[in-house]
Length: 396
Ligand SMILES: *Cc1c(COP(=O)(O)O)cnc(C)c1O
Image (spheres, rainbow, N blue to C red):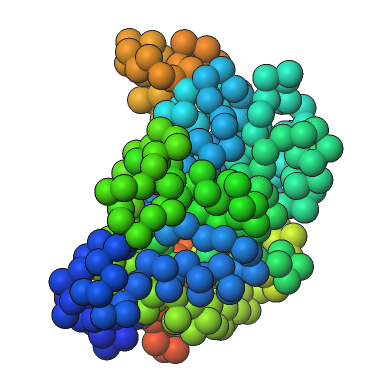
């Protein structure tokens, strides 16, 4: 990752198709578009690849989360279980739906711990948003089973895990709905884009209607369409979809390169006793966009992060200090508490982050470093990187 590193003729050709017709809109203009339906084509190819029935391509991963929550009927006063380690968009989507985010601890998968989720359920819990962080999977079978038993909606935030699988099944297809992001730095990119996938025809219908002002998408004449539900505009443009289509067709190549590079790096670090790999419930399903590892304690993790940077090993994240990916720095949610005056939200019920205690997650994230696996690396870059990392981490 990210997919933009391998932009080429394929992306250019797809975009040119759209520019040649002048039809940048994903609906209608049947004659003028000369057979080019980039968003629709992406949707059918992506659904087929994932083995799911329906896909709606939309404007962003954040929009996909909002669409999924809306389609599932999650709203005011509902509690939604989320992890404290995720991109902030997961929690924003819950708050903007008017629901209350409830944080459960993660485990060494760096994703929600199913046992911890069970402990935070209340009569108001309606949904769980399981986030597959850094290219790899949560214990998604156990989370799906828990949600099924408790009658909860499971939404997967697979924004960072396109191409990942668990026991051969695509991440994003275990819950009622799966959400993906194709923003500018994700594994495959549309520039901006996202997708909601589902096997449920009713949820799919609500999703595409909600993302387009409630249009029922049932008439040839768009202006004559009915609007059965309230919606908004979270549409993708054909230009963005065109880029995504070329990228989607490169996904296997991207995954193969990431996996190969990751294996070389893991081998190079095999003689570093302090390095503990992230727990992968199914190593074969890792999309390998990141190399994530834990050090024995926070002090050594901080030292390792600093020493790696000093040794010129770029692209490493020490998430515990990160503004965007760990709850510790989400000060703005505390300030939102009620002065935000957003009448549609459940913020008055959201006690704010000040009260949230996630000591297990603090310990795990405090020990964790992730490094982006880049597609632009040559074999020599990867080997050199492995040597430099091993020299640093052998001494930690
Ligand atoms: C990127 C990301 C999102 C949001 O996607 P956008 O397309 O940038 O809106 C949501 N959740 C996670 C885990 C992400 O990494």
